[in-house]
Amino acid sequence: MTRCGTLVAAMVSAVALGATPLPLSAYDPAQAGISDLQDCARAALAAAVQVGGDDEAGGALFQSADGLCHYTIPVTQHIPTGVDYRVAVPRNSKMLALYHDHPGTAAPHFFSAPDLNLANRMHLPMYVLVVREGVVMTYLDNRPVRDPLTFRGHYEFSGTRSR
Ligand SMILES: [Zn+2]
Image (cartoon, rainbow, N blue to C red; front, side):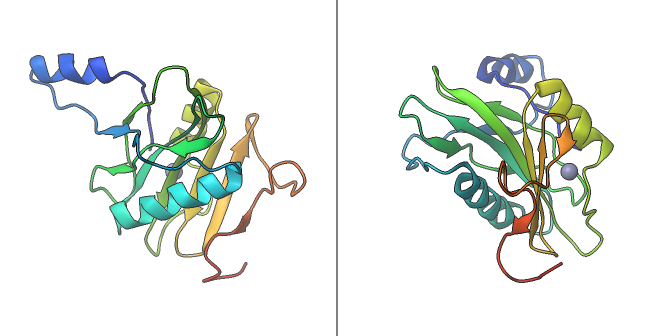
C-alpha cells in the first residue's frame, strides 16, 4: 500500500487547503553517499525498520550529483499494513528505486498489488524488506528479480533468518 509523489510544493498547497498531506520522505543533505546500490538499499531498509517499528515505513533511493546512492529519510503513517508517502530529492538527482518494509508476523513475503502498481507506474525498481524473514525482495523491470548476477535478487538482510 505504497504510493509516491515527488513534490514538496504539493504538500504546501495541501496544507493551505486544509487537507491532510501524505508524509514527506525527504533527503538528508548530510547523509553520506553509498556507491553500491544494494548497500544503499540495505541502509535505507534498516532505517525504515528503525523508524517504523511494527508499522510500515518507506522512502526512495536516488542518485545525486555526486554519482552516489542516497536514500530519503523513511516515513511511516503508523499503519502496520501500508504506507503512502511523497518523496523529495535534490535537484539534478535521479530516482533509482523505492523501498519500504513489511513488518510484523503476518507480513506478506510478496509484493502486494499496490506495490506492483506503484513500481510499474513509476517505472522504478522496488525493494521490500520482509522484516520477520530478514529477506529483501527486489522488483525490477516489471517483475520480481532473482538473478544474483544482475541485481542479486533476494538476499539476506540481517542474517536473522534464512529461507
Ligand atoms: Zn508492500
